[in-house]
Image 1: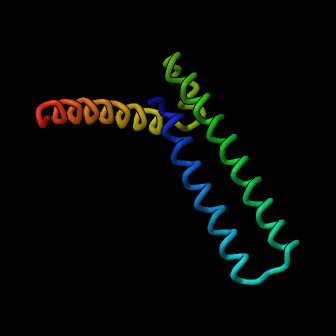
Image 2: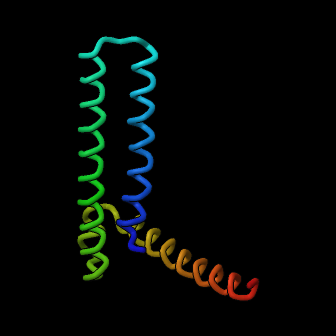
Image 3: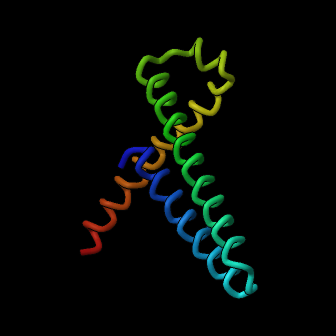
Length: 107
């Protein structure tokens, strides 16, 4: 599973929970319909902005990683973050392999 897919899946679960919480809180508080609508619209827009920012970040990450462009990464101040993400992805691949092996031996 690609990094963006994992990020998107996690973000959507979090956003769905946030939206559900906003709905519950505003209904229980008995606030007016207009205030509720405005709050929901704000949450929807915040979610949309966050998703777009994540998409931009993912595209920058993939471009820098694919081209191994350390100069741009350093200029943007994200070289350490890119290295950390790459290390964590490698660890996840290793964990997936170990889980797969463990499942084979336990069956």
